[in-house]
Image (cartoon, rainbow, N blue to C red; front, side, top):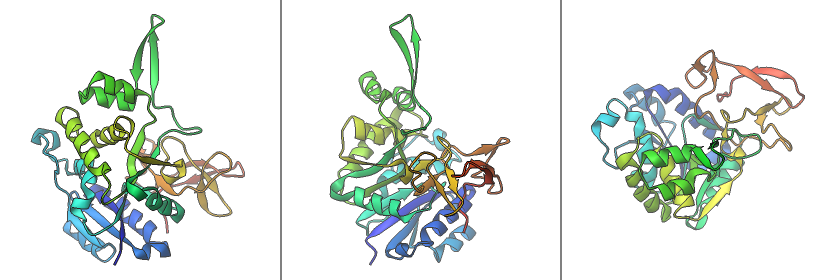
Length: 303
């Protein structure tokens, strides 16, 4: 009996990425004791058949919270913005859940262990998108000395979702937590809190980004107990490119002490000549090595 599970979601367009994520997980012997579950947001029958021998469960993603049909027509992949807040409903037979977006992959198993440890006692295990060298996602334009125009991911979504100006201000400069990788226990009270906030954000705001805003509300407004994990547990390459260790053949953080990247996340895409590496694994970009050389590398998973 497997007690813990790793869950992801994909549609037909993201199948290759999902398949690579699964292969990266299964490359570690430790994965033998971990279930792999998939939410289907538009996979083809052939794709699902290819997955059946590699994963433990496949369930069709639903709209767990009703949303206006005109907002989601022909956009089944948007179910990820809702369904990940309801994982115990889809896969009820597990004690701990680790969600990994399908455009991420596992390079070092210690990060998986950390996520499963982080969510003990009902806590939320998650990373912030803030650290040495990371892009600053919040900006302030000062007008007339004392008046400021705030531009931040949390603030923008909060205003459009009409959760109230005081809550929006509280979120404005809170370090954004990225919902692309997180862990929770089955009985954690965070699920219900997150779902309630998601109801609020979906009622007025955009579908995309709603669940991220909702979890940020849970962390910074409702103050659910949270275990913040280091950046290498969810390395967002579009914020800061890693370096490559030619001796160990692995990606590492670009600053000392150059910790191994545990989970590489290609959120927002890695772009070259207007093409996204997530859609074309042949795309390579210039990466610095630990010896300060420059090499062309793909950041996609390779066996």
